[in-house]
Length: 273
Image (tube, rainbow, N blue to C red; front, side):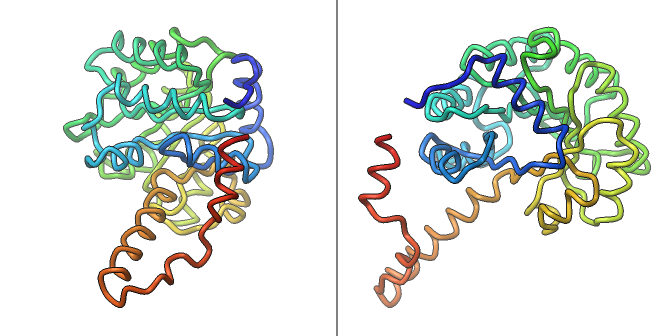
């Protein structure tokens, strides 16, 4: 087990990263992937609900419940010494009280931040008042300075009734007033819109790379983004390698997929540290 800082120190470290020139936050799906990412030099790690779901053999999108998800998150937290922020989807509950319960349990397993989204599990967005109430409940369960609350809005995934830009900015302002520390806007495709959002939202902006857009981190930082996460992209790449290995073995039967593989002894050393 890797030594971990006190939760308040870890939360302060994670929050400070949002107020620099920008940082990449990779998403782990199990303890092993988290260890590799930490050893690569990342200052903090996020979890991916999609990657965890896929590792359990089920699709993303609410198929893994709160308790099971947090069991996997806890293993990731225990495996690393850097701050961990969790993807807890919409908060795993129909009510604000249930969101607060989720955040409280997340704190208990050692995470120092979380994404909470405003999309309903069955589709569509929560009304902005309800979404803000859910965030306020999360904030009450984990006060400022102890937990980095990242409010995700899915307006660019077709949830906005009108102009997604205006709706995003309006929701961001409400979510910040409810206690969010930063705003996460997945699904934005073009650099111009990302730059406008970074200028209009009065808080650190989180954009996911490798999902709706393929803009590199350096360019995103230049546009004003402060937190670049990957969502399930690293997990997808890993499953892509697994699929190619399977096809190669079933086809020519060659071992080209092993090019670039970490040697057995190296993995033993890394996981034994």
